Length: 231
Ligand code: HEM
Image: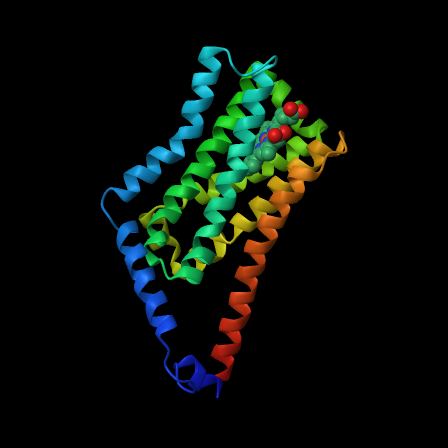
C-alpha cells in the first residue's frame, strides 16, 4: 500500500497536484533565470550597505560601536536561518533551483560572522589579541560565539567543489551537518548574552525557527530511512 502511494497509485488523479506541479515548475524557471543569482547576491549585500551608510551618516544611534557589533550578529543569525531553510523549502515547494543558492547563502553566513567578529575585535577590543583571548576565556557567551565561528570557518573552507571531491560525498555531507551545531552554538551565544538582561523574546523567535528547520530535517531523514528499510 505504502509503495503504491509512493508511486502515486491508489487514488484518483486530481487537477490539484498537476496545477501545483505546474506553478512549482514556473517558479523554478524564474529561480533559474541568469539574473536571479546576481540579484540575490546584491540583496545579500544590502545589510552591509545599510550598516555602512548608517556608520558614515552617523545614524547608528548613541553607541555606534555597539550598534555595529549587534547588527552584524543579528544578520549572521538571520543568514544562518536562511541557509538552513533552503533544503526544507526546496523539498516542500519543488523549487529545485534553490539548491544553486545554498553555497552562496552559506558563504554569506560566514561573511557576516567575520564582519561581526571584526567589529567586536576592533571596536570592543582595539584589535589587541591578548585582550581578545582573555575575553574569550572570561565570558562564556563569547566562547560559544567563537566556537560557532570556528565551525563556520571549517564549513566555508570545505564548501568548494575541490573539497567535495577530496572528501567524498558521504564524508562531506556528514561534515556539513555541523551547520546545525553552529546554529545551536549561535543560539546559546545569543541566549547567554541576553540572560544578563532577562530578555529572551528575540532569542525565542530564532530558537523556534531553528527548531522547525532542524525538526523538518530529522523527520525527512527518518522517513527516508524507514522507506529504505521497507524496500
Ligand atoms: C556564528 C557566529 C555568531 C553569531 C551568529 C552571533 C550572533 C550574535 C547576536 C545575534 C548577538 C546579539 C545582537 C543583539 O543584541 O541584537 C551577538 C552579540 C555579540 N556577539 Fe556574537 N555571534 C557570533 C559570533 C561571535 C564571536 C566569534 C564573537 C567574539 C569573539 C562575538 C561577540 C559578540 C559580542 C561582544 C556581542 C555584543 C554583546 C553586547 O553588546 O553586550 N560573537 N552576537
